Amino acid sequence: MTGNCMIKAVRGTRDLLPPDTALWNFVEAAVRDVFRAYNFHEIRTPIFEETQLFARSVGEETDIVAKEMYTWEDPPRLLQEYIDSYREVTAALREGRQPSGKLVSLESLAGTQSLTLRPENTAGIVRAYIEHKMWNRGLNKFYSIGPMFRRERPQKGRYRQFYQIDAEVIGPPSAGSESPARDAEILELLATLLDRLGIKDWTLQLNSVGCPNDRVVYNEALRKALEPVAPKMCSDCQRRAVTNPLRVFDCKVPEDQPIIEKLPRISHYLDESCRKHFEQVQEILKAAGVPFTLNDRLVRGLDYYTRTAFEFTHGALGAQNAILGGGRYDGLSESLGGPSAPGIGFAIGEDRLVLALKESAEAVQHKPEVYIAPLGPGMDREAARLARELRHHDLVVELGDETFRLKKSFEAATRAGARFILIVGENEVKTDTFALKHLASGEQVSVPRAELALRIQSTL
Ligand code: AMP
Image (tube, rainbow, N blue to C red; front, side, top):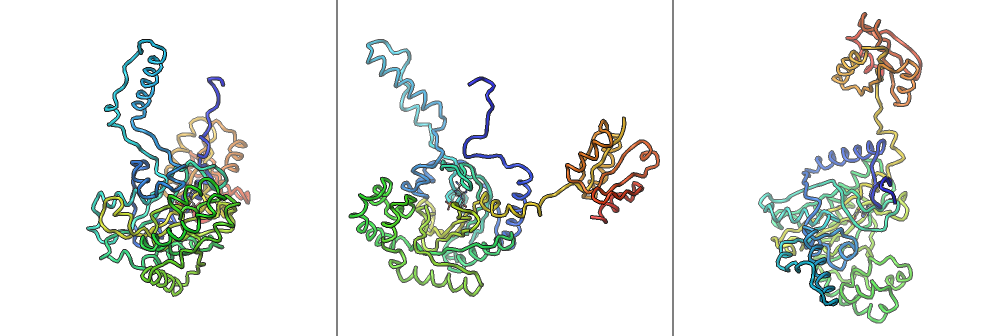
């Protein structure tokens, strides 16, 4: 490799470029509008947190925590210095010589912290809820938009830095946070949002994964069922069968699927209150006209989920067809040292949402309404004045350059997709009247300065 070797974006990350960014902005604007109508408020949490936060909430045995997190010791140098000094001292001892430096003391490492780039955002939001004692405000409805990081195998629709649109409803039970009405409201919001974005062909897959009590009984049943078959499964499943059997359902190995298909179903293990809760969610959804499909294999890849769990899938996305996922997490606050704070939330994969929308990209592009072509020395100044005036009228203006010949200005205006070209030459400036040409029709008119904005706007 030479010193001048080109540096590219890291594998699994990507640059979001125009015109695609217009689509991202369109999505985010629509999302913010819908959230406002449902009385959600934005929350922004840091993109890195203590590693323990994710280990304790998402779960040690999940793929996310066990394999996919970007984690480092902070400050990283201290740990490296410790390792280097340890290596040097052991090598010196082995070789019977004096070590070149001292062993870095273990105590000095006590100040280091294990940090992780967030792989998801519910844990961070619940941490913030506890840290800022937000239960005092009753029911909280949060949303946030931002990047997440998982060390997954990159492919279309799967990246190592990707974007999620998160929403969470969380609060003390006295504020109604446990109510099935909250679950149904979240799901209805999602249906509205996808419809508003023009995303058709979505399917809502719905399940209840029960509460911790059901989970103990179900996990026991799973463990028993897995005992005789686990040795035939992949090494991950063999481990999961012992440590966290529910996670066997996250397995993607094709050979394991027939075995998984025969395992006991969570729907048979729900207690009376969970069953009732789930029935009520379904009843409200039916009343609201939100279609859904029951799928009792859907357990989601995170440990904190209780009761309602769901995914929206979309036909056009291929292998990575889950456009969003979410569920209840009634015990999460307690497991992070907070008070009882039942909650429900979801994360939309924004990258996948944009992919699903891609066909209509053209519809949200903005193009310059007018390209100003200064012709000849000194005309850049006049063009700048005119551009400022027109932009004050909310027009999208692209500016040329006085060194361009007329032909080059026309080419540039066409390439930019401008609707009009406005010629700014010495004569025009003198008479304060400008040649305005409609590029598509070729029609040209002379327009006094004061009427320019109106003229351009009225022919939009
Ligand atoms: P999860 O937090 O795993 O439930 O994911 C919620 C949503 O985020 C999924 O339905 C996907 O749309 C999206 N998502 C998860 N992981 C990735 C990834 N590596 N790349 C792109 N989108 C992702």
